[in-house]
Length: 324
Image 1 (cartoon, rainbow, N blue to C red):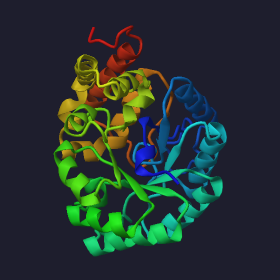
Image 2 (image 1 turned 90 degrees about the vertical axis):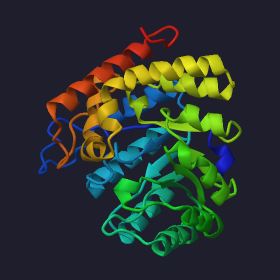
Image 3 (image 1 turned 30 degrees about the vertical axis):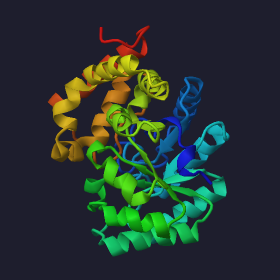
């Protein structure tokens, strides 16, 4: 089972490619398996070190169970253990989570991205109990906590992290993007849980704790992994000049979306739509339409997403990943 020290390099967060017409709630078998295979092989060929699937961008909450299993099976068969796969299993209740984790365990998946059950907010006692029970019931699959406060309506306080670091030994990582919390998190978990930032906060994490900042996740990798891969490599090499240069380029690429991604209320409303719009605009893969009911996106945000995708495409084809 993966431990905290095993998380290294760039973990690409990918969409679940959808066939044309998948925006219609009556359409079944919506997974574009051919595009899924093509995307996975391309990402591996382009040097990603791991994959995270079936989170928010992967539309875990809106996939049918048939589509969930179709996609998961396609990923495992295509990747064929070439790189680690962290696969989401979040659901409304523990019964579905358990069914999904049993399925993923049988597939031999290395780890799961797991949030709290989503129907009602959890107390800390409930949250700790949930991850403790997951660890006891599924001892062979590593757990990456999906620490999204807004999605799961839970603050993930220090006492939660301190408790699960003791009671849930399979919890070995957390998907996290708030640099201001890193010091207290490391203290609460005693270093047993790897705190993984995204590419946008990687530099800030590295500034605070170079020794433990060994990996990052990037939904942006669906637009092409090269810029995020380059930043991760600069961090690994402790190359401050390259870190500053590439970080500035990534900020330039993301600038059109900054007003929306920086506003928690707006981003919560259009998270999936923004990600799929910019990924499709970049041209690295075709993730298809958004599955219902989250298809609405204001024109100005759609235009900003398209511009972000175009800028990321430019960086992917820049010899030195510099702002043009």
